[in-house]
Image: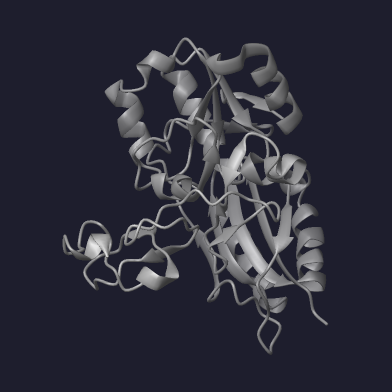
Amino acid sequence: MATPKIVLFYAFTPLADPEAIRVWQRDLGEALGLRGRLLISSHGVNGTLGGDLPALKKWARSFRSYAPFRDTDIKWSEGTGLDEAGRSLDFPKLSVKVRDEIVSFGAPDELRVDAHGVVGGGARLTPDELHALVAERGDEVVFFDGRNALEAEIGRFRGAVVPDTETTRDFVRLLDSGVYDDLKGKPVVTYCTGGIRCEVLSSLMVSRGFGEVYQLEGGIVRYGETYGDDGLWDGSLYVFDGRGSVDFSDHARVIGVCAGCGAATKRTANCPDPSCRAQFVVCADCDAVACPTHAEPSAAHL
């Protein structure tokens, strides 16, 4: 029986011909029956793919055969399932595109990349090194969430600073506003799903005068693989595919709060108002309730 899998990966490395990489990855993905999303730029590649295990293993061998991608950290997780043709149910199609940025901070001219990755980013911390830093510095350590605020509603590091962001582009505006300048003298640990957003975010913070900036290597995914729900993480990990979220153990805390009834939930959904593109935390019983912006005052407290 085919085993559904999902891979999450990125590589910051100079690419002279992003279009050639796009064609290669599109043709390879189609030939192997993969679905998912890949973004490619002159700075590197960022992707999530789903398919059966043998197909993804073939993809990984081919991907790493290209010298700049040889050492890419590919994170594997369980997929929801496969259709009759063996294609992932977690993605509607395969999308491979060239963009100015592989993670959209809206600051492509600020990012510097060489063969070793992002230049000027925060110091990397493994999960064990993160625990050692917290043991040494205690409450002085600031966890800084590098994801959209919605993602943090269902899972985050305990006591983390969660910026009020709807998109990744909001980070530059917030950093430039000075609202987080009080953190410039503290050890700041940036974290995100798989590590890619913090590669850029930590470099933006360093260039703006934050003196002691770290990034969690491998992101929340690698931390969860190491410590599960028995460390500094609370809740579920939001993911951008059909799964919606993943848990690291059978005793993950549920910290999300339904916008409709206030019940604990890790579920997120799109606003049913056709004019709205917002996504918010809502339990299955309140699925028809609109997001807080569009809900009638009485409906928000059913």
